[in-house]
Image (tube, rainbow, N blue to C red; front, side, top):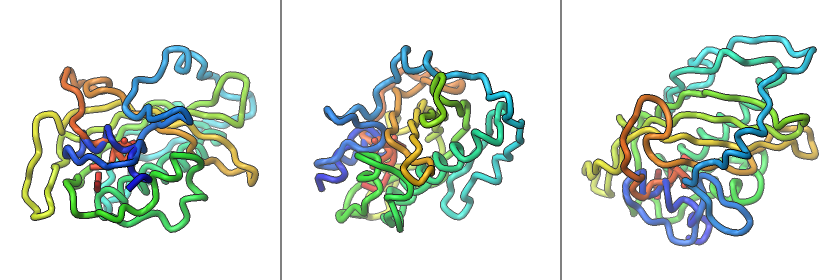
Length: 241
């Protein structure tokens, strides 16, 4: 169960399931779990919103990056997209979907090394205790708010999304709805990606902030125990623990 410890926050958010030994979802640094921690203002300020001179604007429909079979629904995609940012967006969504698939169905990613590195990669490894604990159900709704590169760099990027768990339920092993008020709400999720040696974008870290940090959700409650593995563990991010 050590692999899943990083999910501790989403695990709470997703249904109060405590995943022993994991700090997953969202963002664990090499020094320990940071899942669910708000992104630092300095990190946010370092993101550059200016496209490169050669970048071409592109339109990405929410449907094209949703997975209706899984119940992962993208409700909105930032209009400030370019062809250069598109691979970043796709890599971030692929990782997030794999993380939620693990936490909703217990099925791990076929090739986690192609999606993430470090602890973010460990969060995609199969949970041997699923479905012995409380886990989340679809729909998982996400709006993609920001896709951009680190200032003056093209090998480091960040994607900021708003995770909406208001329609997702926490379910126990008997299939009973055990959702509590602390299991619902909207959470800002920040995903950091890097270019690997094959020049492919992979997730390095994912962090989930407190409930009410995005969208029109003004709730001040803290997430229960669901941090998608980092959020999905039940946001730690962002269910099947």
